[in-house]
Length: 438
Image 1 (cartoon, rainbow, N blue to C red):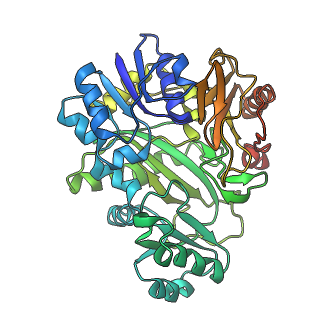
Image 2: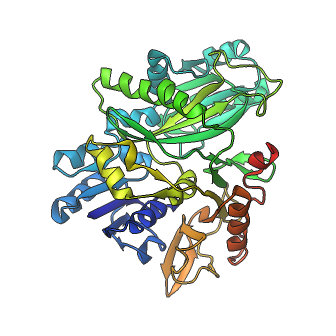
C-alpha cells in the first residue's frame, strides 16, 4: 500500500516503523516527518496541521491510506477533508475528535453512556469556580476544556493552588480559547494506565495495555510532561479487566457517539485509573463506585505509549488500520506478541520548561537502530550537514524488548547508555510501579 503518516514525533516514527515491518511491504511517506522517519519513508515538507496542503498532496498522489498521528489536525477536520476526496483515513472526523478537543464534551458523552468517571463541573466564571471548590475536596483537578499541548491539567494539592490554576485559565487567559471553559473534577485515587482501542464505528479491538510516566523526574516528582517513558503490558490491567474495559467503557462511548450521528473510526485512547488493593489499599473509592474510572479520552495514539505498544504487535498493521478506517475491523486484525516492551524518553535539559535546540546527537548512527531488541524512535530531531540535531524537548524514545518486563527495561537503558548530547537527561525508574507490585 501507499501510506502517508501525518506528524513529526516519536509516535509517528513508531507508526511508520511498524508499518515498515509488515511483510507485504509499503510505500511510506511522512508529513512532515523527522530525521528518523527519513530512514524508512519519504518525508513530505507539509505541516501536520495544514489540512488544505495535506488534502492537496493526497489528491495528487492517491495514497491507499492516510494515518493521522497528532490530535490537532484531527480536531481541525483533516479526516473530514480526506474523506471528502475519497481517501481512506485512519482517525476520527472532527466531531469525534471532540472527545479529546473538548473535555466538557467528553464528560457529557461519558455521563450519557453510563461510563464510570469522576464527578466534574464546568465553569466560565472564576468566582463561581472557586466557590465550588469545597464540594470537591483535596486534591482537586483543574482542567482547561480544550487542547493545551498536554499542559492544561493541574492537580492541586491546596486551595491556593486550585485558585491560582483557575485564575491562570479564566482570568489570565494562559491557554487562550482552550481555557475559556474550565472543568473542576474529582481527583481519582489509584494507579493510572492506558488502553488504546482500534475502532471502526461499530466494533473495537483493544491493543495491549500500557502505562506512561508523566512527571519529569524519578519518583514521579516535578511538573507533568508529555511523557517521560512507558511500558507494556501494565500489570495493573489484569486479564479479567479487559472485557470490562471494552464492554463498560469503550463500546458504550462508540454507541453514544453513533446516537449523536458520529461514526467514530480510528483510535480511542482511554486514560484509566484503577483503584484496587494493590494500587490504593486505603484510599477512597471514586464517586462512580467503580474500581476502573476514565480520567480522559484521547482521539489518537498516545505518546510515548505508542512506542511501547506497537513493537508488541504482529501481523499486518496496515490491514488493521485500513479495516478500522473502512468499517471492517475484526478481532484477528490485532496480533499481540508474547513479550514486553519498555520505552525511555531522552529529553533536552530544561524540559518541560525552556531548553536549547541544535545539540548534536551521538550514538544513534544513521538509522540502523530499528531491528532486534532495541529500537530508537526520533521525537524531536532534525538532520543538518550530515548530523542529527535536537529540535524538541523530548528528543528520542528508546524502546527495549524482552521476554519479561525487567529484561525489556534493561535493554532500553543499555540502548540509552550508547547515546549522548549536551544536557540530555532521562528518568532512571521507568516501570517502577510494575516492579513495586511484585
